Length: 130
Image (cartoon, rainbow, N blue to C red; front, side, top):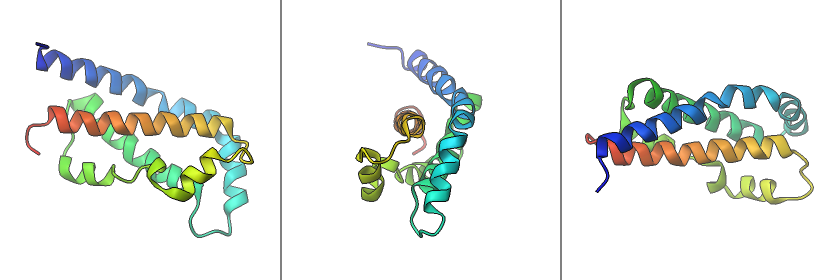
């Protein structure tokens, strides 16, 4: 049977590792983000906005785990992290469309989505107060 403490620490380190990649990846996709922003500037529901919201939410929670090994207000964070890019039909449609040539942004979205799932699992598994 695995040692729960060691598993939590390994999970925390992996979340920290992935979290540290957010800013460099975000900077690398600046040209694609700018192009997307300009394509969507007159729309109400935008892929750009969803990516920004997901980035902020995931980065904040992952940073708390990386720094402290836990998050403050875990129930609120779990609720916030239910808002996933791939849970929104128009986002999935955009992502899967071959007409949208944003390979860097799509890879970034995968990274954020994966980290979001890991953060949710970490909170549910390792924080006893929820």
